[in-house]
Length: 255
Image (cartoon, one colour):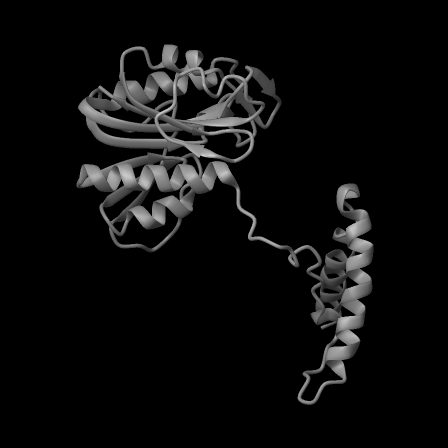
């Protein structure tokens, strides 16, 4: 019982202190705490108010904003990919390491197999998860009719997710996706596009030309993307995103 109380106080103290650990939010956090304490005192005096124990306090200081925030790359790429897969009416789709939110939605329209070095343990209809790597997928050459890998390949070879270090990681991932894609099959692929550089060990940023070279055996059907301002633009020219600091290229390839 004593240990549980200590843990509860520890968790609560961390929740209070964590808001002060980010210097970029320090001033906002201090003003947020002033409002938080005022609101808590005011709430406690209201008729029907529940008891507020210290260990049950959970200061949320950064949600009182004028618009709903979202991560533009993932928001738009998942929408773009879902629509493409829906339109193809494919009966079985393979995904390699993409956002699991997209995976859950895809299971409503087709059977989905999710490949990742960290299996997704989820109970869903039309879903299976296989442990595997984008560098060595459990499929024969030219065997997969529909495959996606979104915001994944830029991480390969940097060790961030426990994978081996390899400067050619992204290129090798592209070659493996090409290997398993069936003739006439569709590949939906995304990663950061802009001025090429390595942000160790988070990700690499590539130029559009680099990616087209990596997938030289495939036909580019469509290139869309998200620019630095978070604007989603469909059917862009190959050079459109190359001046970005951290854009996102959405590539639809066909073999």
